[in-house]
Amino acid sequence: MRARAAVILAAALAACGARAQTMLTRQPPSSLTGVSMPASAKNYLGPDVKPDAAFGALQRGYFVTAFREAMKRIEADPNDGPAMTILGELYRDGLGVRTDPEEAARWYRLAAERGDTQGAYALGLAFLQGRGLAIDRVAGRDWLLKAAANNHLGALYNLGLIAMESDHPDYKAAAGYFGKAADLGSPDAAYALALLYKEGKGVEQNLPRSIEWLRKAAAEHIVAAQLELAIATFNGEGVDRNESLAASYFRRAAAASNPIAANRLARMLAAGRGVPRDMIEAMKWHVLARAAGIEDEWLDGQLATLTARERLEVDEAVKKQVAR
Image (cartoon, rainbow, N blue to C red; front, top):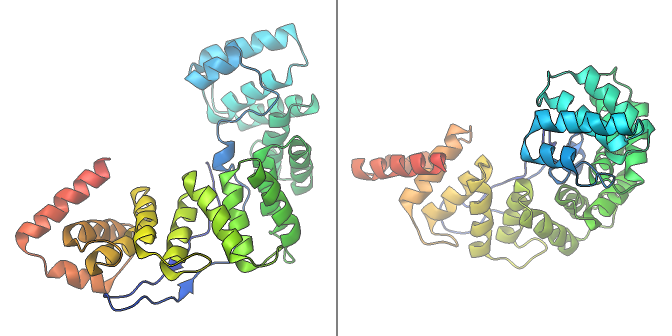
């Protein structure tokens, strides 16, 4: 995802093993705002695209072939919107051709005007982001609405973000867009919807329902959802408290390079909370979190107690993790 707008959800776990602090520091769902291409929309050219030589070449990374085959289609049918969208994708990312946002936007417009769903979505983003076109939020939203009418996941998701952008955010509208996209399988929308249920914005507050959507998003590798689910599970918010399960969620997010999750996992490992106490593994995650800017004096103190041999083991564990 080029510019995913994500909420970083922080929590404070116990400093050493007695009992968990449950104070949570979270940004509200409104901080999701910012037009982006969600993970669920990556490499997706919409329902109008049928497998053929051009699309197959694009999927396989044969970009020059994709360009040539798309041009053949347009020569045969000047109203082939999906083929025009493929050309737009190639020019946008400089795949087999020069990077040219203006040329990409031209092809997207041609595709969108011929009713291509992905072309409408891409043109909407181009207007909203000022990529190859002057920024025009009204036109951008209008093209996203056209794509959303055909259940385009990225369009629905971004319309939800847009609904929360003004000084007077419309959370009810946002929840509607996120809900539809989530029902259609968008993990990004599932995460956003989970936050709205948690905060009671646009929908009635419902923590168990929030957990349901978090689980769906986390299962689809939305790292922020894994982190939030770990926090909720550790603290017993909307779900039975389970430190062992929380540790597994923290581990998944930490393995995906989330520094907050790495820090929380390090604390649990160092204190033996939900997992067997393992100082080498704990310090591995602490070193990685600290390198990403997460300071923790208590873990620094624990690191200082290690022997020279144990420090070497930590260094080796860090190298192995980074190499994965």
